[in-house]
Image (cartoon, rainbow, N blue to C red; front, side):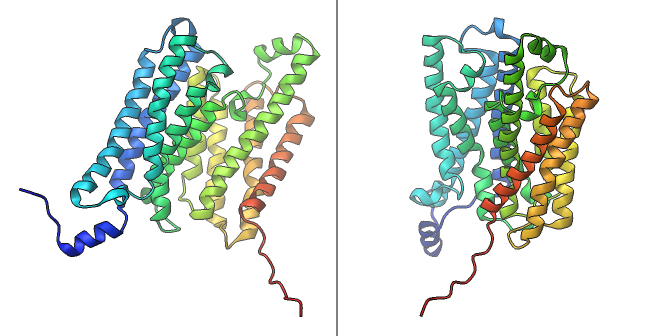
Length: 360
């Protein structure tokens, strides 16, 4: 029996865009988290099992690419279902998923290219692996794919969603945030700031140049990480009054994932204090309600949030054995993150433009 739709419905399907349901968005991001888990497991293998990595075909690559395959097939199936229901052409692609299909294509091509690259040039190590052209393709494709639920809910959500309604978008942001921290792990300040451990002491003993470079890397890494953290927060706050738990989940789970990937089991204070910083950010959103219409509160959030993140981070280092950079450097960096955060907030939420008086 052929599938048919009423004429009025057929006109609507031809002139409007399909929408993804909450369940569909959650399924997309759940499959995407499978892909994200594969990325971090692959990172763990490169960090801790280097001698066992000899070719492209590894168990951790199997987790990564199976996660991608399931996610991509799910998005394609969402479109196919709507075509069967009578949606036509590009209207069958749910709102927010257009770039997701492009991302799936980019990731697929990057995967094939990555296999060829590794076969011809071997397995990269260190920063070289992060900046490999095919790995950057995978990063771009995964980001476009996993952010589909975020774009969908961006277009179809109230400004004050419940935690449940916001959950697919939140998990999409968390996964994208984690992809970014993974690809910039050499700069990520929450895990790469020198402490007073034996490893950093040994580096410092090599001479002034090593200590000089380590301190500069700490400075650059924190400032870069601060832009990513505050930029993510500002983007969300421009659109929503984020539910309680948003920043706690992003900062806490991401910091845990980063340390677990490196195989560092002695950094519980950093994870706990990063989670506490997220709790403080959530508390500020709940009490002050910063938004486009409450600019002062937005600025106050921009001042306090980086102090919470980096002040607590350095406190965690102190608790865990001591800060490996000078007092002047770590206090100055904390102040600089606040100044940069305020400047970024002005770009995101600029002052109102006064009415111009036309010259007579």
